[in-house]
Length: 447
Image (cartoon, rainbow, N blue to C red; front, side, top):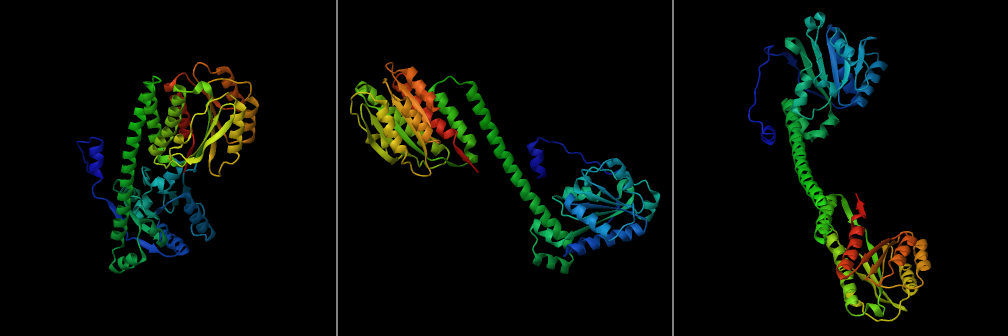
């Protein structure tokens, strides 16, 4: 760990300074393990009572405020310590400096949470305390690292003064560092409890550090990816290539939080009236195929299986279903064909209503209504769709110069949907791809 820290932060020189106080006068007792909590409290109280009866001061460190308060209540209920000689030092304590100064006075007992075991200078100015053997420190929990243990021990025998330290643990807490009852029994018999505690503590600490290092590595990777995403946004020029790049970054950045992608049932309601014959129809089929392929690719980028269903409705003066409930990966576009005729929005939208009414559970319906022309109806029908199907995602797509853009935009507004327009085949494909991009990037299911 030390080598990693020095290497990671470019530390080339380390200076070690000896203590100006000489050899420590601290006495360290052997660790004690107690099986039952009440006996654990009693053992701590008895040990501390012995020390304060000898006119020393005692500081007891607890893992958290909850166990500290429980111990304090037990001590008060059993009148274990003299009135006015027990004080608490935790994050909520007022006038902390006063409590710290009093902590080393003869016969004083101070209960602290672990945070005060590091960096707090419990200087002993009471000569009676020093003469009796100095400050006595009790640690009641397992440290997360050797450094924390050293810091807590250092609250006793400061600046050349005498003092002592003891570790008193509750047996059930040993599970936190993976010590089994069999290992404990063996260590007790061989009188190697301290070595056992240190070994397991250090193993857990090393594993925790490895996890943190790995998290730091992943965070750096995410940071680098975020910078690339930010740069791509700054360079955005509305080109298909730049849009695809930005979409790729969005999927990569959200990949770790995706449990699954929402399943959609895509309903394509396509105008196959006479004006769509020839090249316009080919452009439309290519755009629908690009839309579907974009959805499949985005699912792949998110490590998700595309399970969407596709239904295609062709309409002219009449409407018909050319593809129903086909899995998105089973080439649904190949199942539709051009017919020709007039233009009747109501016919297409009414048939779409009937199909959406049969939508299977577990799928969110998304209607993609497309036309290159105009007619005198459609507003009432599209309003009925959005009124009756509250979870419906609705898109209106206009195509070519013959499209009544104002009417199509109005229909989208009525339905609370979105209007897109493609002036030619390339732009129409972009419009359709935009729809599946929007559906994919805004419908994550987060763990």
